[in-house]
Amino acid sequence: MMVAMMGESTPQITKLMPVLQSPLLSIHVVVIMLAYTIFAFMMLNGIAAIILQLTQNSKADTEIEYLSVISRIMLYPALFLLAAGIFTGAIWANVSWGRYWGWDPKEVWALITMLVYSSAIHSHSLQSFRKPMFFHIFSVLAFLTVLITYFGVNFLLGGIHSYA
Image 1 (tube, rainbow, N blue to C red):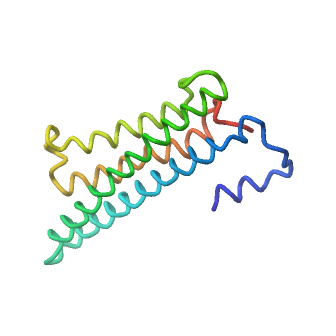
Image 2 (image 1 turned 180 degrees about the horizontal axis):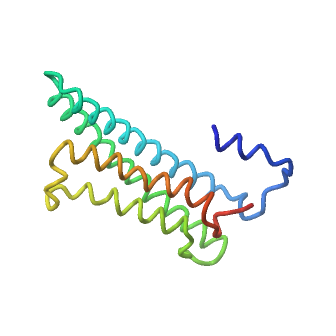
């Protein structure tokens, strides 16, 4: 809501550029935003687990484990949606600019976000991810990559994803 309000503060509203009128853009944005939403729920589960750990009530360990299972279940569709969104964006970029990948700051940070979250699905080889509290702390810290991708790149870095 805050970003939408900030966007309305500029009085110059013009027609969209032709490249932004593609239906692939809508699919790309919706899929990416769904992934970010699921990652946000994972982060909220992580915060809840950290609070439970700090309060140390009698059921804290089972509740932390339960939240970990829920977050792990959410990880797979979120990661799939993020990969699908990046893939859809690459197709749209090829149609629009004649290349799939341009190493734009937004593209790079989306890739970093995907790689960071991809590390969590390798709990067989990365044993730390088997511990529920480590996974919750990871979920909270990994969400920083989403925030950098969404806010940091838009407001601090330029690139082809800045249409201002």
